[in-house]
Length: 291
Image (cartoon, rainbow, N blue to C red; front, side):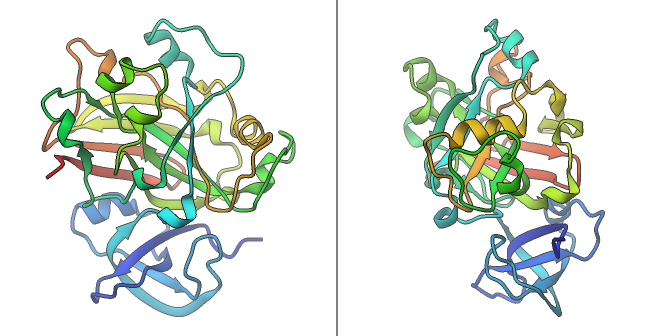
């Protein structure tokens, strides 16, 4: 049995520069929202330096100074992404339900921390105002795997988190491939915590919402997913080694900014909140234009 239920990777409030691993003392606390609201988040420290090998509790406690993504750029490698994985999202785009997962990738450099780290609109796209949000449920792989079956796929999952697949619709519509339009620096915020898979035996029962500046834009139970967690992990692992730390983002529900009339794109100063139930909590980022 795992020694933890959910973990945060963070820099301590005492100005430390080495990332630490801890478990929130308050099991019911929405860590991302608490940090955003300026509240203290106390954690029980582990002696490991990564959520992939957190070690054991030290008996000491610390206050979170800066919240980091659950895995680092070095750990995440290439982010695997599943497109068009919600039935109602396919409907809003007038697209056919796919028979197999649509896979694209984002580079490690697109990974971003929760608030106060921002979503960054690249300079060359600032004048076009076509940067979009996509609330997503994230899977973090805990053990290396390749060619796994659906039946054994969950054995290789460490836990779950929240993500935002920030996308630029101008560059997306100009190309047949999505990697460029979705792979800019800081285009994949992730966090605020990782919840152990043991705490979420059935991800389809979770709910996810997305709010832009306080306005509800996206809401869905994860049972609207076309492909399950096990199906996605199995499919993506065929012929491909998924290393520990690999992040799989699993598609967005209906309500993307591009689907609204007029479109609800992100501009300088906008906030976007992705909330996932099951103890994951709220991933919050403000939007800024690249300086």
